[in-house]
Length: 492
Image (cartoon, rainbow, N blue to C red; front, side):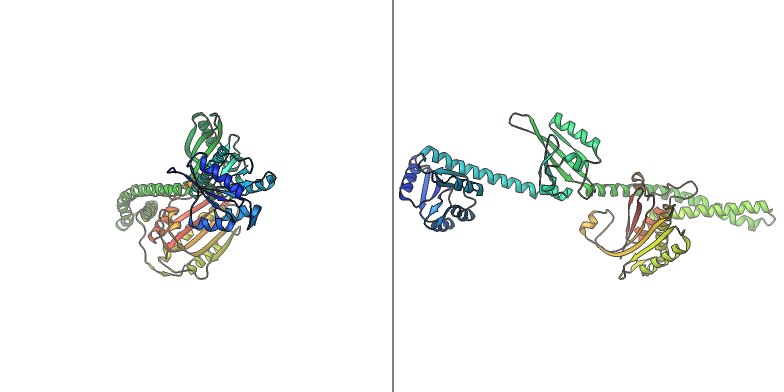
């Protein structure tokens, strides 16, 4: 017997068929098969619990089982072992059903030759192994977090793994057959053309793409494309592997924005100190001169008052810049944020135009925070005034507040956050919205889109400075023509 003999389990009760098959298996080719024979299905099932086999030869008509049920019972117990069905000349329908249920091949009694048996058994084993390998590979494709898809050259999707379901939202049955261009690239036509041209000319492409999910959300993916060819080396399809880097890009943007604000803050701080040194003697002189010069005419007194007023205004601007760059020190006490927001709402109702509707939604069990009430009042008023200015024709201003515990996942989404309890105060409007290009700059000192003389550009930078000094951070979401929402996260 050779070292690598194939172990065959023969399940057959007809003595004549058993004798013929044993002779064939033992002689053609010599010593390449070892055979164990049983005549009942139950014996075969019991034997499989104690011994392993490479292939099973199964007669569907046995003393304890008949027809397709014979195959199904054995297959449920030994689906990992290739099964070759033994059938009579008049059992073609039964044989086809067994093949549909998982049989690897069949042999017709009376037409069995040594060469035919050998090829059938080897084919069954190879086919089973190939199918197992394919199943393993498919399972690996589904385990990966990457979105893997295949489309034909007309961009119709022919394969869609579970990673693609997770990233883009469409189930495989929804995506397969759809046109990938229409499904995923509604906003990236130029990027798509470049990728298609490159993969068709060079056989591969790598880059970043913006794609649309089932919910309409835009995601950024790191995309790798490969051209798949058929046996004749002709282009057949395109394999795409997408890694969702949306969160990574958001964190990078936050990091660069924080770096930029820090650089601007350092520069502004130096300028502010220099301005403070310049303004201090000017303000002192403007206040002392009227005391020393008693006989000044009205015009001279008016000029000195103008000098003092503007010097004070400059000093206030310097103070605002410094509050952004080094944070704000204030009197800390335990605050009922609910009361503070109620006070803000009352002021808004009394002072804002009637065309602006004020709505509030404050959690009843809102936590307290340790903070400076005057500074937090300034934060909310700044945001509310900005919201009013964004609704020139009126609209809805919504104040809301809730408790929120930020976990590890939440923290990964924001560069400045940390795990813990926060009070989240939201100021949302239905105004004109902020252009995407401006969103990256709105917290920079002196950046403003308001007309000259209508804003210093220090309001939002002051908000950031105050909130940071309270151990929190600020986020903003906006859509042009729809509105803007600022969220203030204050650490409890």
